[in-house]
Image 1: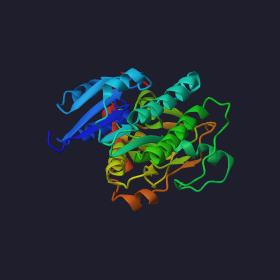
Image 2 (image 1 turned 90 degrees about the vertical axis):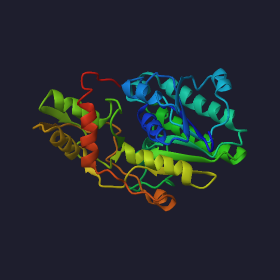
Image 3 (image 1 turned 45 degrees about the vertical axis):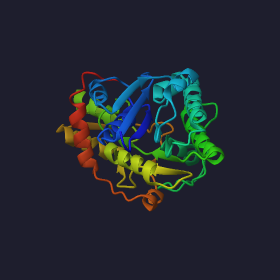
Image 4 (image 1 turned 30 degrees about the horizontal axis):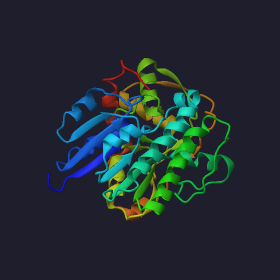
Length: 331
């Protein structure tokens, strides 16, 4: 196909990966290759429908395997590396996998593509969790800019493994970019939500609880967050990958406001569900930051973008999806 754009999306069966692949698949000249190990990503009806498109290929692959890369080839224009071992259960029970698989997958990815002259940009999915150590140990600006010095939490803690693996991944991007000239964009996602995000995050978790009972406890009720709807996050991701300068740089992905208290978020979810609830405020979750909000000035200086979804609108769309899937709760 003339002017074909070939895109690799690792972790493409996951939340952000699926929505990214679905958006890019609407461009007829884009050929999308999704790679996922399906340890957490799901081959559900939506992904099955997506892979039926002529320009989408889904591969079950191990990104820590040299043999897999030998079959993958080098002729990709854009690479979105979203694959990672994540989730509270994995961080608690399998910190070795969080460290090992997350580190090996990005190292082997860059080793495989380091001599490629075809790549226009590699996007690496990082996280707002990367700021948690700095917030815990020192004073930190909120909204938080990307040039905030990074600090680890307790190095002995299993919770530190996810944050550390993302710091390692960012370092790989910067150093391989410097040495081999691989253009990179690093995106630190902040409180992205939407359909098909699993059930372990605060919004779907509260949808499930409110669906079951009118009485519920809410922890960290006065903590505030700025929530970003998935479609806006995907648009920012694509623009950062395709429209930013060569070299390597890091950007927050999210919205700078409005911030909302967890308590008010739960009330808004209940209103969206048309449910009357009674809330009992509980103790704060250990390690949960009082505020989390990205400074978006750097991104706004690089790309032209305005969020299209308010929290009200995003929650309505999200609930419309979840109310059809409440009998199949998964991580």
